[in-house]
Image (cartoon, rainbow, N blue to C red; front, side, top):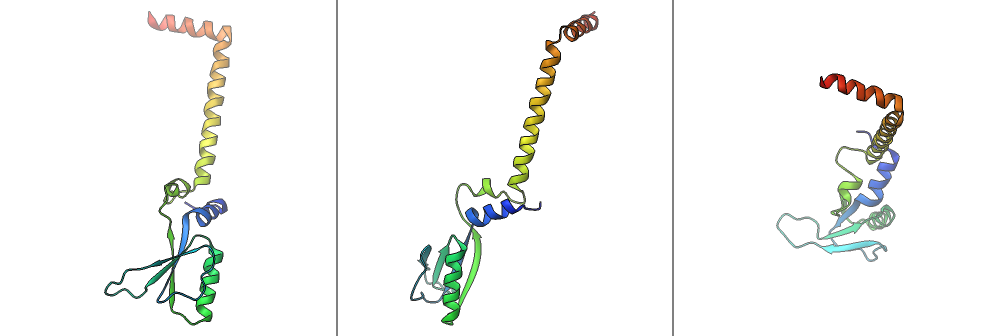
Length: 137
């Protein structure tokens, strides 16, 4: 399903986080970035992972790494939070889901109200009870 601007904004703001991997830590780390030292393992090329939940601190870190000619790689991953499946369900738009839920609720309330108004009409009620009596015979 196609995502709306609100869906993309929700995912960028609350779901995605940017991981920047480097061989060595830079001299300065922008505020809002968490540094994790990765355990040494055979075949691992990077030793440090910097996690940025907002794009601006990640951009500052990336420009600093580029200016100092440090080798790095970036990945955008989903956070492991409890609310991620609710904000960003797989292959679905939360905005369209909310719109359809609202339309369904309004339609159900309108139908129930219409049936209630019909049942309160004494002529309709008499016709329905007569029809039920005929069907029971």
